[in-house]
Amino acid sequence: MKKIIPIEEGDYYLTPEGYRCFTEQYHLKRGYCCESGCRHCPYGYNTKTNTTNKK
Image (cartoon, rainbow, N blue to C red):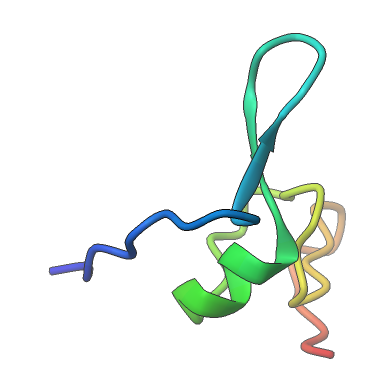
């Protein structure tokens, strides 16, 4: 079962299209890569090679 991460200020912002975009701060708090090719992925996930290069 996945743990629930409380959302805090700075964890996301709204894009011009109205979508919630999670920041690097949130991804680091979550502690793992979801392999979805997130815009601010601190784990360096590459959708083309399906690999991560953790910073």
